[in-house]
Image 1: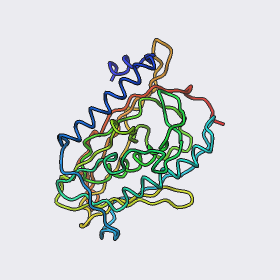
Image 2: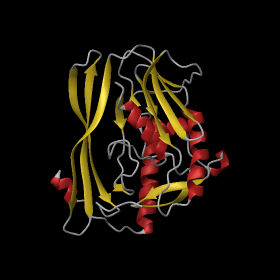
Image 3: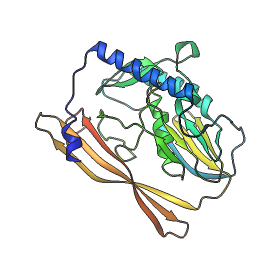
Image 4: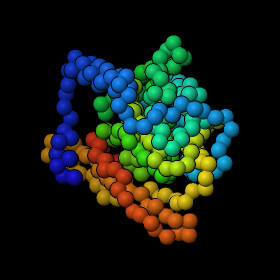
Amino acid sequence: MKTALNVMKPIQRSKLRLFAGKRYFTWKRYLLWYIGSEQGRLAKLRLTEPLDYKIFSHATPLLRSLRNVDMELQYNKITNLRLAVSKLNGLVLKPGERFSYWRSIGKPTKRKGYLDGMVLHYGGFRSGVGGGLCQLSNLIYWMTLHTPLTVTERHRHSYDVFPDEQRTQPFGSGATCSYNYLDLQMVNHTDCTYQLKLWLDDTHLHGEWRCTEKPLYQYEIYESAHIIRMEPWGGYIRSNSIRRKKITQIGDLAQDELITENHALMMYAPLLQTE
């Protein structure tokens, strides 16, 4: 882990470099879509009726009081989430099929009704069309870790922007997204069919993974090897590992596996009291 920490000193890049880099990775993804080289058949079928068995469910609050963030961006985020959920709710993942966050949602544009929401940008935040959709990708990733589905693409947050106040999940257990090159993908390597159910109420974004069969295992996601260290150049880097316990229905531990390692630049001073 030490070698990974030492290479995370912020690098100032020009606007031209950032623009060119984003265009390069965007068109590279379009090429992958065109030649169909990504793993598995793309899941497209959506069903209104839920499948029989709930595998895992979770909910996250729609509004949070964040320092220096205009609440209008969060209200706009709710509109963006409703539009994205309308494209994903009921999606069925059959054996051998692949889920792609952006292939299912499409490009968020003003013409489709998306509004300016908060977008994390190189350790800070700004407004951008479709901002806030990371809340949905975070939710789907967290739920998927509690299923036997195989995550084939997930991108971690490179910056730890906000303190842990009101955090209910381990640090580093989310999945950032940016159309279209930072995608969230998973493949169903099981013999069962899964279904993604999503909805919003007045206060929360809700999600479920459902299945045609009863689950054989339960999953416990936990954090290990958490560390915050000050680097010689003056910044703080936060690191941890996300692990998963696979537990049988009678409570026996069947497996304890590493899911991912996270390293993020902290954009606030550690150990300070939040207001």
